[in-house]
Length: 151
Image (cartoon, rainbow, N blue to C red; front, side, top):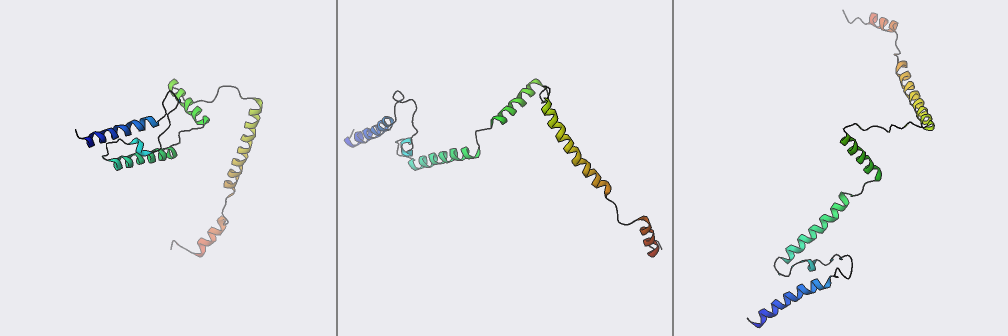
């Protein structure tokens, strides 16, 4: 083997060893740090380096977009409601309100709102009943006499 080929092979192996050595070992620290340099993620084959870089950049962009488009968090109320729906479906029942007796205060609040609701509906019904025409039957009779449409 020629001296230059051996030297190139050693350089390739040395680069691989350096990238592995740069990362902190799992025994020294609990978590591995993310490699921010994209060139350290690429193999040392020297073929398709730019293609590999573009592929890695696209992956990072997709990760960022997916974080913003699909939030992974839900409020505790939404989680609770989903859990209740699942539990009711497992039981084969429709979702029902709690069977506990409402307190006196809750009854008072409910009655107050019910009265308010009834007052609003009553006023709407009165408005509908009050709608009348300005003309009376006598006015229509006079109009027919003046203009005979049936002749």
